[in-house]
Image 1 (cartoon, rainbow, N blue to C red):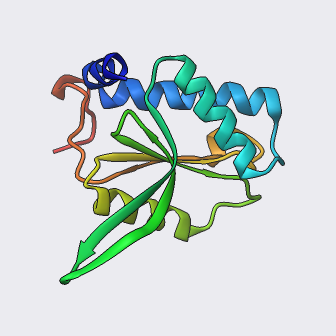
Image 2 (image 1 turned 120 degrees about the horizontal axis):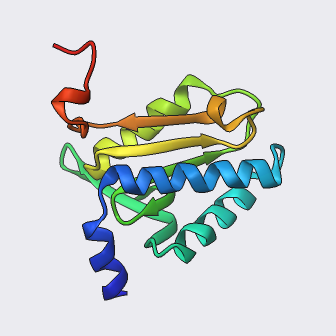
Length: 148
């Protein structure tokens, strides 16, 4: 576990999210849409773990707010390398609430980025959303366009 944690700390957020997206794309091509969310979650977790990522499934999260403690208030589908939340869906159309829910999870966990992956979409491009929470851009200033 220590070796995996050490490797996880050396990977950039972009490397982690890139590997997740690549793996999800290959899964979507191989399995297609229409299976239960739990199937995609288990397969995605297994493929990422085989690539050396630290993956926690159905991680219970507790938090404090306004002097109250909420024990096991919610569960994230996947927590990858203790830094990226992945919420897996298998629905025909994304709902606005899904992105808002993931952003709330990121804020409560104080994490910079999460992926909402809807395997029920006709193409993964239509079902993939990267949600950020106070994440600094990683591209060098020379690569950024249309930004002031």
